[in-house]
Image (cartoon, rainbow, N blue to C red; front, side, top):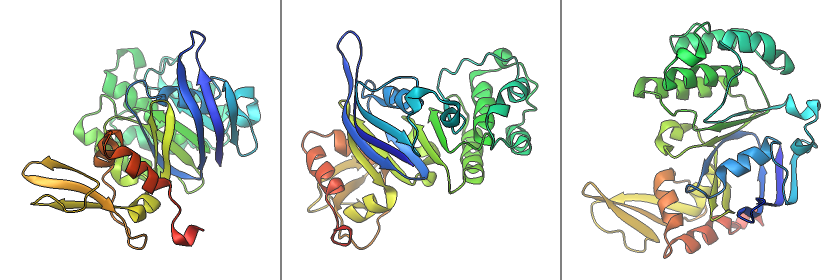
Amino acid sequence: MIDIKHIAYTYRRGATALSDASADIPPGIYLLLGQNGAGKTTLLHLLAGLLTPSAGTIDIDGENPALRRPSCLRRLFFLSDSFDCPFMTVNEMAHCHAGFYPGFDPAMLAANLGAFGLSGNERLKRLSLGDRHKSLAAYALSLGVEVLLLDEPANGLDITSKKELRRMMGRCVTDEQAVIVSTHTVSDLESLYDGLLMLNGGRLVVAQSTYNIGRRLGFVTSVRPVEGAIYQEPDAGLFRAIVPGDGCGESAVNFGLLYTAILSPAAGPRIVELLNEPLQDED
């Protein structure tokens, strides 16, 4: 669905945000991780067609998003963390804007808003940060686009609303959609992720399905230090560790632990190597 080949992006003042990033992203819900300044926002802007790569190509089902053709733009939507809505209410936005998206479902929008305790007639500028984010997330999920890009969708939401957002995404996202979620709070939607994209220093070091990560790596919790662990850290009297996988069984992925492990100078290179190493049945 999304084919990224050797893309790079350098800002006018010479700062390199992305370098030689490649990935093949099929339908599914993907977690996008990286430190501040790692290039996450730049990547989302490139995928949305708001920036043009300095090198390389991005292909969304045969279309280059940077060309901003209506045939491509109607198939994707980018909800940024600082989305500046030009409409007074979400219902007004749907009336004026949703017609550009053939997959828009007004009944789904009404159900999503209702699940958050909203009607869609609330003035967005008068809402709290959390309620504004809930309104816009409800709208984005009702558009039915093939590619949905979400930047910190749970920002400002309370615990109950985060649970509702997780249920909503599980209900609204179809098997034909690719959804990329950039966030620093991994646990909010952890049970939904079909894959991981991780940037480190402007490089896309991991682009793998959750299934393949769980085959390549084992995630272990023990009361004692884990022998043979590539990476481990103490946590409330326990040790959480990453060990090499056997390529057969699938381990439940701890995305937070994996993130800190990849950033570790000692363990990161080995983990990235294992994640990108082909398994026997992939040869």
